[in-house]
Length: 484
Image (cartoon, rainbow, N blue to C red; front, side, top):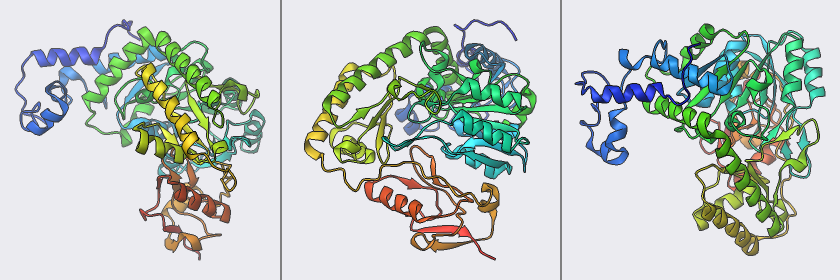
């Protein structure tokens, strides 16, 4: 690997050189550096449009990088402690899918928790890999899914010695981490690859006193959402590889689905953000952790709310906790998390990351100001005073153990028929149903529809969750596998 300075940003520097050359563009994009679309320039700015360019020799090519993108990949790999890093411009979704498809071919097994993001199950539909689900632990007080128990992972490995890989969330949406090191060591002892969904764990690579990162644990691949806590533009991510995973083969897999027209806006944002984290990450995330702890303490003083943290640690299904996360349990004030979410947005002009049945998540970053945090704390106090009610009748569990009948691919592509969702109990779903965010399926293709699932879906609708996944936009109809 070429020795490069983390103060460098090769893609950005190449774009600056290109701009200074005053090249006449007879290539795409057709807006010609903004000259052909004044409204777009007025909205996004001339600086943005002048670097929205096409791949060419001075700027390299994302599908087969040999110069500045290649150098930027090497710098990212150094910063994250990986063997290689790929720039992903189709989001972390494409990185998760590339991991699964690199590790598993059609018919091969992969062990994974059921509370994965839909992108992982989508990867099973595309690839034909067969899931072996490990039910996560559940915190009965909070009603949330936790990490995987080491004992349950070991049993899944013993029951499925032919599995090719295991996928781990690090962390979950709520900030909860499994015992990543122990699971990695166990999987490698059984010749299985370790794939890590670190969509919400970018900062683990740069902060002190934060949970262990995938690369530090010796995992084989990790999907890292730089656009979440890393500061890059939405839809930009890294895919990291380690150990014996082939760089060339992984790139071939990526190129099956990733665009051939990689956006230099996204690529340059990754380059700049990697440089920023490599040079200043520790101080950035120390500040974020301190802000999160202050906010937790103040919210817990209000009463009724519970902003949880490391007191949940149990040495197994909650092996570690991401203290930069601000996850808050709301049911004690008689409101679902999504109801508090809606009130914050509609009445206080505060947009948080998500609210679900029992909890909400506010995403904190170095971009937050103390004034904004105080406004959030005050709004939560006022919501309690104005809206708190008896909590009886509220759902108190986020996770329902699935009854898996078919693989996701078999169910998704099977002959199917539409039914009113209320009449579908006992049938096998051919579609997803999920609240978004967080995008963890309530129901996935190949799973049996039960009364408990339908009650949960109906309750989610009533509370205002944004449900997605079915062909029917109103989630009144559902496609099920046709019975022979």
